[in-house]
Length: 299
Image (cartoon, rainbow, N blue to C red; front, side):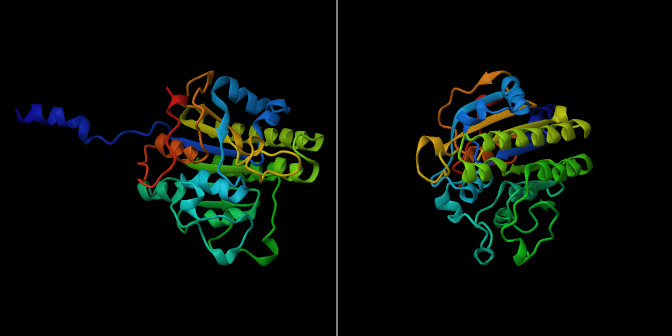
């Protein structure tokens, strides 16, 4: 009877394995999905055709880079995370709620976490001891950013070069990668302009570098990738609460993903990215989360 009791209890005593071993979140800043579908982006479009996707996901309001990415990486709306500014203001400190990186470290201190960005204002999302790597063109130690770098902008090819080298060496369990080029071109030349189309092409080539690194690191079969954006855009801006600005793509590819699947759910939000990343790594979602995993995208 004692042996039988142990046998029956055994499944309850075993910790559930993560659904995937490595999660990569790639954000195309200013990624209006209508324009992306028209752009020359063979790497992204291959992942769309092979994986699961929606062209009708939603970002927060206001649809600005730092608030939107904060929701993407904290799982909550702006009313909870409190970052309502869109530039680097060191005196305002860090985000006031946990990020997916700090939650991952709390659950698994040995997991490797990394954030590679093209805009230094992502420094507001770096909670102490949450990241093994914070990189904006170069690796930073935790502490103040030099005043001369407070407007720093790093193009996608350089972001990808930094991220790919780290992926090959460290094989992170959770890694976020941000490409800023299309947003910069949109503000200067307009959304859908020839210059922005070229910027999307450059970002797609950078994505290819990341995909190659994941493959060369030997972790492709154990990885899941989420590709999305912080906001869309029209004309030369993205601040008004209209569909062109607030609609974003949401694409996933890799281990456990429903292949060749158009996601029917119409209410995917950017904070669902955080929830999905944690769910994939089998890390419990906090009660305060607004986001929920996009379960339809997975087997």
